[in-house]
Length: 558
Image 1 (cartoon, rainbow, N blue to C red):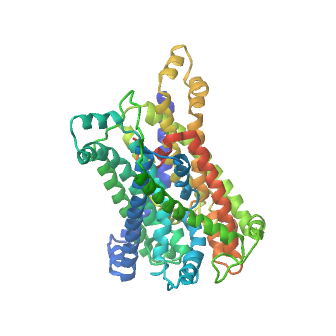
Image 2: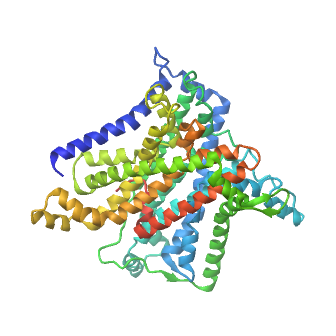
Image 3: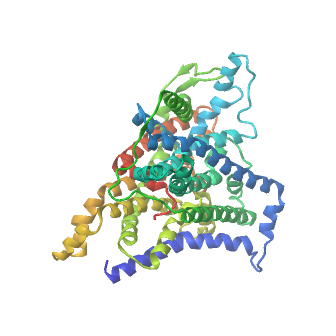
């Protein structure tokens, strides 16, 4: 890239991130320690002195740790089965274990309440066997939040770990065995160093997502957590600075955890597949091992499908009270999802906002991917860190900072949140498309571009006729994935969209669920429609990216 366009683009990108990421977050920091005249720690002290707020922080911390532990327990065996073993129906199960990704956890919560309530389906089944009812949603819904988030997020960790283990060169293991190394030594010296970076990358994304999630606790009515405390303080944010202190606490926590994960990942020496290696050879399982694998996969698949089945049942139920399954069924709730005034505007708004944000990210992603892949310099790591920073900034934090920074301006979300929603979606999902495009640049290499330039082709023609066509599948995959996640952005959407006619799908589902009558059923029908849409997007992206799908969810762009 020529120097003039290079400097113009980098300057514009830096300005964009300063205006819509650095500046708003700095405003949160300032409002947390400045009372208008003096520097003070009074607001931060009030956070730690308030017993209820302290409890909400530790509850969020517990949710993050518990969800990470559960996803570890589920995903590590899965990753081992699918990378180190061969068994019948492997391809079928490899698709089934990724099903949770097609439904946001707050949507699954709509149906899970019907299954695990005191008079829900699970307890009714237990009662039929003479077992007393169990308060599965005890603790104000804490159990439901942890279970549902773990079932939704384990594929992220699974994809990261699988991507690491799949690159293991089998010849390294054979060489170690020939030297007399014991299995434990092979695991400690070869497999573990390869496994840990992928694990840490997946674990931190799972932890941050669970730690900062707003939608699932709201649906389960578990209000004693940090994200809901921040949500409750939006209305008085200009008169009570404690809300800013809470946001700063969440931001600092997520950034610290993110940096620790990055440091741990970098400290581990990664053993990657050597040139010409044939990859990992799957080991055929004996009968006892095969029985164990199928039993484990059956349990995981059943648990993973529960939220989907429950939401579908709520969406088609006409009457469902004190019975294991709905007594009568109907399709009118799906009709309502396409005719209800609020539902129609929600779908329309989300389609527009997600399309606009994705279009912005395609342009930015191609340019940033090119800079990272085709240029060397001190600024490269700084640009990489800037682009990946949104992974460590929760949507609720960014939305709160926008409300603070742009209130009273032309971008005031209380007047019209459209611009800020597009910008927020674009900033938060840009890392996904950058990673996809960056992987594409690494795949195609520079030889063809250099050959074209040597024949006299200019930068524009090389880009149009060679680079973009070769990158098309990666661009499409990243764009589809970006669009899908924009459609179901929860934290930022719930905070920024204040007027009903501005609600995107996520806020519409939340609002309908709070209404009496058939509101929860229509909300579930919208969730099913979203599940089909998101599932289609992930299938297409996975088909285009293949085994590189897991790279999208890593914590850095290498």
